[in-house]
Image (cartoon, rainbow, N blue to C red; front, top):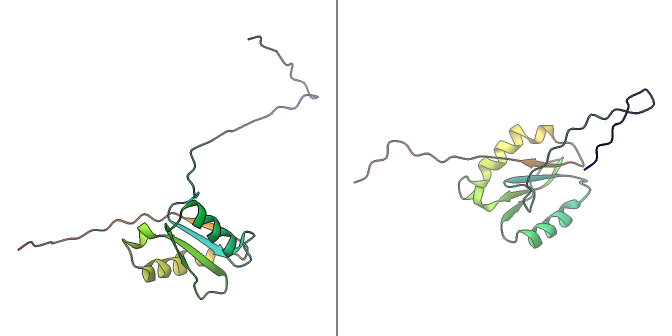
Length: 120
């Protein structure tokens, strides 16, 4: 391969490029997707897409909230933690930072631990 040498002067721009890439999954999140009201894709569009891409994997929750229209929660997560605890956590720690029109991905790692187990 032949190298071409470009002389640098004030007429030639210099480009600083940073490139990253990684695998994606379908759907592009694993745990929770929050849809704010007036989200461009809409609740019906997103839930319809998820029924096609990942049928029966996500639970649709419609909270009573002035900003949030819907939440899609992976059913695998709900096997480890009750939905009311997930909602309370989101309401306290995530909802205050979401604006109308946004779609927010939430990664939630849950570890279930039992202490002092006695087997008889």
